[in-house]
Amino acid sequence: VELNYDPLSAPVTLKILARPESGTRQISPPGRGETAYRELEIFFGTSRAREKDRPKNGRDLATFGAGDSGILTLGRTLVTVPRTARPFGDVPRPTVDLIVFRFNLRAEEPNRDFTLVATDVLDTGDFRRRIGERGMAAKDYSRQAFVFIHGFNVDFEDSIFRTAQISHDIGFD
Image (cartoon, rainbow, N blue to C red; front, top):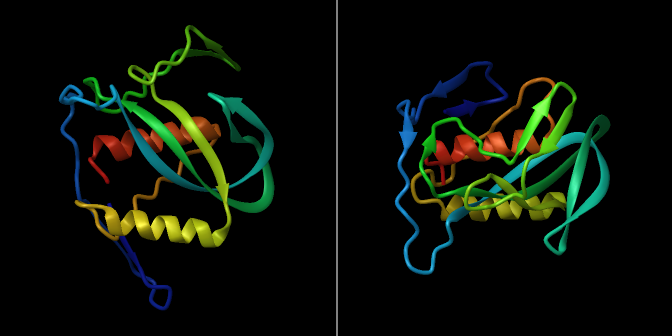
């Protein structure tokens, strides 16, 4: 979807750029020297309250809870997306949710699960610079942004995974 908005005039224009066909997205197997997964950089803005950083794979990941901080925090995450075929819309994870509890069924595996590699908080200048660089480097969607606004009662990680899934499935670079 392309969104054009001019604050001086009220109309907003939406344009559908791509719609994946239903079914399974076939991904070619990794070539020589490639991993069995792809890393996607996802930028975020959130007003969620920041919690204690969580260690993972030798680095600290910023974490955010359900509460509102009243402050906009900007940042970026790195998400792994398996290169294997999977149905459109699926976000494979090694967990199961039962009412209010989430249980791990096995260890995360980037070659079969969506995983978080990094979650970093950025200052406004660094955030803008990185987004600009990313937009200019894109091949198919140069100087465009994919913005996903998640629904109610969605935790931070799930919203990041869903953003990565949609971005990957529509081929947004």
